[in-house]
Length: 159
Length: 111
Image (cartoon, rainbow over the protein chains, first blue to last red):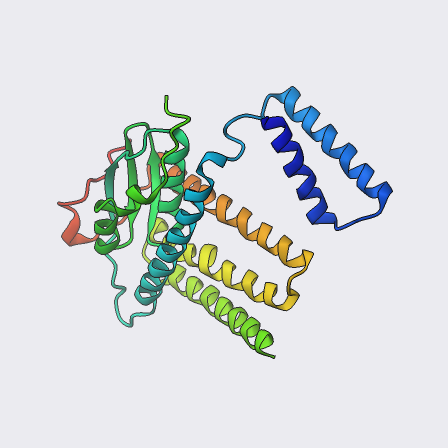
């Protein structure tokens, strides 16, 4: 099943990038798709980590939320950069409990922290996340755990 | 005409944000805080550029490719910033912490 999904996605990708409709070129596209899928199967990389379809709808909603967060924190950091006089920052290092059970959700959470300007993940281990925050406000926002709750959980993978 | 205006608005705003990110890089005190300033160019600046270019291209294969670029930047840039920060921390670079918050924030006690 995963193989069929992968094959159709790879072919769709090929088609969207090339935009060719001639019979010969389509045939060549199908051939290269089959070759890629064959190689991927041999390398054993068609697995649950490819793309988490079971998360799709929730991920879409999460991306909207993340976009809003990125916009807000961007404006905050821009304000701090453009204030005259000494820069208005209070850098600090905080430790957050790991809120997510599965590797994938944990990774999404840590990457989202880095993606929002003003907070960077310094270290990610099984039970904690160390974060460098540009300001007190950014650190406090993370500690409320709002973003941790928004990250979708991936149940299929829990180990 | 409207599309053209929107496109240029996005492009100019994106360029402005790039400059602001550069200013921030010079104003902030140490490596970790500079990483935050660069975060602006990574996210909003790049996104605005790509949206502006997509308005120029319209609904074509080109804008699909722009979307792909956006997706790849979206997934790879946090990984790259995390690796930089992680390497700096493992290398023993101590972050500058604000004076009033040293008691509250945990110092990194890596060798």
